[in-house]
Image 1 (cartoon, helix red, strand yellow):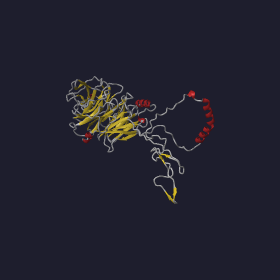
Image 2 (cartoon, rainbow, N blue to C red):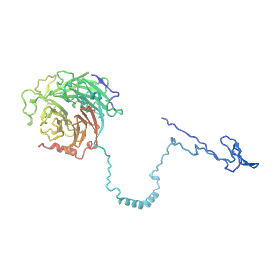
Image 3 (cartoon, rainbow, N blue to C red):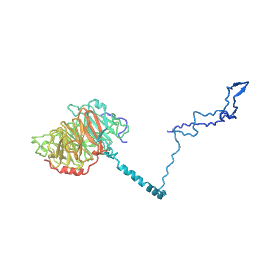
Image 4 (cartoon, one colour):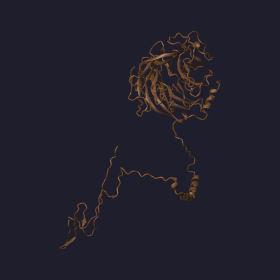
Length: 530
């Protein structure tokens, strides 16, 4: 695996010339008709003034001297007192503030009594004025509800027509990473792809030049940063492998990989994730849910495994009759509960979400090869979508609520206590590829659609239409992924089929909880689906 690293790590983080002008004051001598010597200050000699004389009746004039003294002055420097206007070197005189005890209180009180009547008279005149009728003062700073901060991309990946298939923020919230691959039809297993990362805190951020680039021999379909290690990121490949990189190691970032063994997924990895025990969990459409642990040098070892078999799924009135025999259920998405480290929700190709547990003990009825016993994790089956599920998201504010989105263009809000959804919203006539709860607003979530937009919902305002519709792509090419930033909560990143990552800045309307919002969420969770 080759790597290409851009300069710089991912970690965050005169005398003044003075021009002086000298001038000389020039003193004037006696005025016209006032005889007497004129002291020439320049030459330092006495000059004798000449006069008009009458000689034999003829008037003549001496050309070599003036008969009257003339006052002269320097035309280039008239001012005797001058100040350099360009450089002022004098230190400012500090303003002395007298302590209140040194003020003349009686004189101040007398002054206020003298001006009181005049001030009240002027205030009354202003109060009766209609000059500002209809003017409303707005003390809050006006800003757009959503604005685009950065448009990021990697030109070599975009030149290959690769899509941004996944996005993840690191644990500090300063670095956003994306995976490049393809989500449309075709065999992309041998196509070289990339993992790119940008440190948004760097002053020299270049949107088209990532801080780190990792070349990968197979298309990367999903990505997840470690929950506490800011530079560790896991990726799932089209080939079925799971890899972990350390993006702070510019020369050789690969830490661990699963390799291609009997334990490895046989289908493309749909989603990696880090469990609460800091293991890497991967799911795929081959029906396996696998937990990996990095051991030794470069090897991810399988520690626990699960298999989804149709026979062993809890029955639901909305599901078709289980077929006889062994039938794997393809997993397409995963989300862990924020309240129970063992609990997770799976999205499936069949369109139904599954509530699953890492503590499940029942053996899976499967003949899939594995170095560890495979168990059946499913505990509850929910009513299905009209097509495969592409994304699930557990509420960070309520233990029983989660969202799902899929190819039917609907977002379903489920309670883990009942099979039917609490509500179903049709957001698009095309696929929905991603849905995420806000990390700071209990009733806000975002969804990415196949029509090139990101929809922000605030259920406090409306349960049927989005509060804001963000146009990510002008040609309506799909938006495949999005992620809120849990540290810098005003940031939302979304990736699309043009190979672009856009970082959107949200207004305080989407980052500050409204009154009784948590209580409204509890009321929503307590509803019984019709």
